[in-house]
Length: 247
Image (cartoon, rainbow, N blue to C red; front, side, top):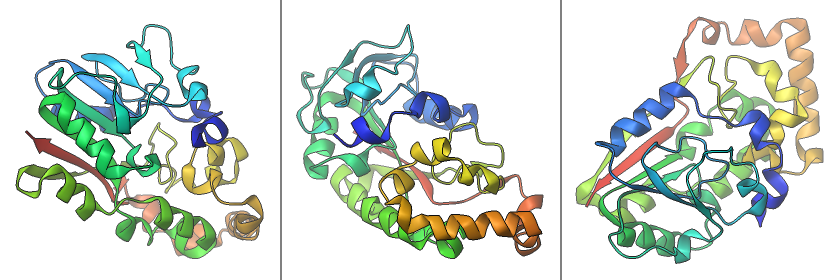
């Protein structure tokens, strides 16, 4: 189980950013019952969640007190009856599913009204300064993990899917891969990188040289000189997308 190894530090670095949570909550709508698929430690879990599905015991053990009832199971075989919930939600999880088509099919089976998926577009993310200039090995991991947006749209049903662009705030609270685009020193911390799949699933030896160069560029001021435009921005589009399928 991937997250039995990579999700150990999630409770320290991965928590919902309220601005992103607001976009997800708007997409979910009027407060009907929600199934949170690939729920992890519970970030972005809506108040209306009646069941959370998560295969990793490590992640389940990090869910805070008062979270929705959770079941250890996979997206590809949901222990939920058909049409049991209004909304099936999947937040930054589809890239870890073993059978994408089966998982999406299960979401569509259990949801009466809507399927909502937060993911990212590697074609945008690949130009992120961190991946492009410092850690190309992590960029290759990101490419391998990323699910093409078109594939998700086709599986959800092209005619019923809308796509919402989610820019990353400069002070994003959730420590996912692109969160620290304006705080580059954060990427030097082992604990921060451990909570990011693009790093935790890339051998440390393959990124160490690039991280050393980043540290040097930060110390010399070269990074700030090269990216002065970013220091004036409050948000950045790194390819994070919310797919909303009305059923």
